[in-house]
Length: 113
Image (cartoon, rainbow, N blue to C red; front, side, top):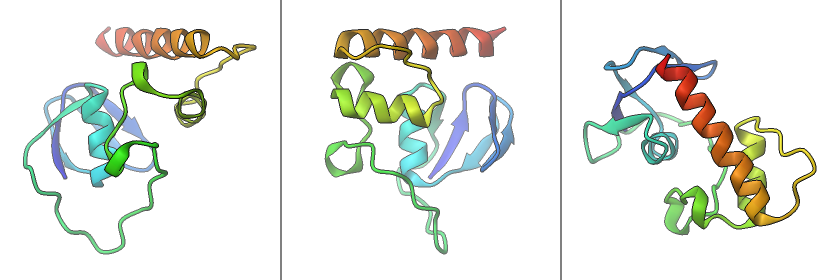
C-alpha cells in the first residue's frame, strides 16, 4: 500500500524515509503505521508485490489493526514485544496499557524534536 510518511521512519527492513515522502509498504505494516499516526494512505488498493514479507497477526478481526485501548492483555504483550517496549513487572491490563501508551507518546515526542 502506498503511504505518505507524517514523521521520520527509520526501519532496518524498510529503510529510512523522511516525513512527507511516499513509500510502498505491505498492507499490514501500512495499516499498523496509519493507525499509529505515522503515515496516511495515498491509495486505497494495496499494490501487488511478489512474495510480500509475512507480518505477524496483530489479533484484529480481518487483519485490521486494533487500537491499544481495545487490546487484550496478550495483544498488549505481543505489541510491546514487537515494539521493544519494556513492561517491567506489569501484569495487569491497565498497567501494561499505561506503559505502552506512555512509551509511544515518548517516542512521538522524541520524533517531533
